[in-house]
Length: 481
Image (cartoon, rainbow, N blue to C red; front, side, top):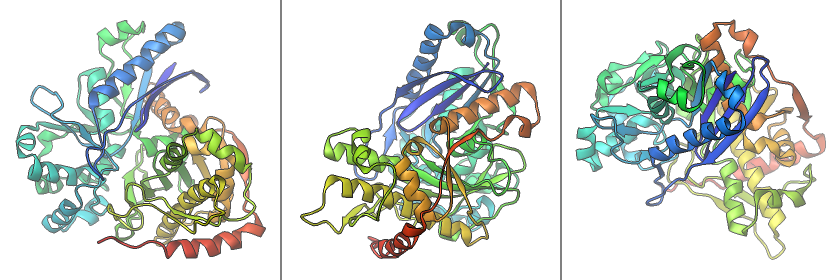
C-alpha cells in the first residue's frame, strides 16, 4: 500500500493506493485562504498539518488494515509558497502563496541584481515565484526577514511535520528562482541575490528518491506496522504528470485546477522566459517540464458560483454536454493577475458584451471559454520554442465537466482526453513516487498511462468560430501599468 498526499490551495487530499495501482480510499479536508488586501493571498501553515493529519485519522478509522500496510508515502503540493521558519522551526508569519502579486517591484530588482537569472533558472522573475517574496519581506517586514532561518515550500513544511527533516524535491524547488535548472541544485548566486545562503534551504532530492521516513510516533498513531519511506515527491503539476504517465517528450497535458496550465515534458530545457513560459525540473530524473501557466482556472467557476449563489454543478447543468456556438459574452479570467504570456499581476478580470438578453448560462459559458482562451495563449507561447500540442490529456477538478472539455477541444483545435479519476492526478502521482522510492522499480513500469475514458474531438463547425472569437478576445487585454 502507498499513500499520496496532495497539499492543494483549497484542500488537502490523501489517497490510498494498492500494489495494483487501484485507488482504495480517499479523504479530503478544506484549507482556507486569507486576502488581507487586494492581490495578497496567504495561508496559515498550521491548517495544512491539521488537514493532512485529519485525512490520515479518517483513513485510520475507515481503512485501518490497509493503512497499516503502507510502505511508502509521496507528497505533492501547491508550488512557490514562502513559508518562513525561525530557529525553532516555527512559522514567523502566514505563507505567501503562489498567486500573490505583491512583489512585482521586487521582481525588477531581482533581475537587475542577478542578470543571469533567466539563463540559470529558465524562468523570468514573476511575483508568483518564491524569491521575490523574500525581497518583499526584507523590504516591508525586515524583522521577520532577519529572524528567518529556513525557507520551505508548503509540502516541505508538511514533510517537516511528518518526518522532522527539512527536505525538498527538485521539481518544486524549480519554482523558487533559486534552483539552477540544468544542474538540479541550488544556485549560490540566486540565493545571494535575495540575501540568503544554502543554510536557509532544505536538502534537495529527486522526486522518486527516498527522502526520509515517517516519525515513529506518527506511524503508531496511524497503526502502521513500520515507518514508511517518504519520497521526494513533486510540485502539484509535475506530480500530475507522473499520475498520468506524462514522463516522455510529446506527452502534453492540461491542468484545470484552481489555477491552470499546459505542460509538456522535455528531455532538454526549452526555455522561453520572455513569454513567461515556466521551466521546471520533472519529478523524473533527467527530464524537465515546460509550462504555460494561468493563475485562475477552476477558481473562475468557483467565483461565478459565489456570484450567483449556487453550486458549480448547478451552474454547469443548463449548458449540457457540448457548446453549439461561442457565448455572446466574453470573459477575461485574470481575477488574480496573469502569468503566461502577460506576466501582469495587476490586470483583473472582465465581462464584455453584456446586454439585456445576457443570462446566467451565457455568462457561465463565457467563464469557461475565457479560461480556454487563456490556455490557447499558453499553447502559443510553447509553440514559440518548437513545442507543438497535437493532443492533450486533462487533469484537475475541471476535467469533470464534459462541456468545458468540449470547449477546450474546439479552442485548442486538438483532441483532449479525460481519465477516470483525473481530478486526483497529483495525489495519484505522489503515491506513484512513494512506491518508486520504496521499490526502485523501473519508472516506465510504474508511471503508465491510465485508461482514457473519453475523447473530445474538435467540432469542425465550431473551430473557426472559436478562432475568430479568440482573436477578438485577445483585443480585450489592456495592461494597467
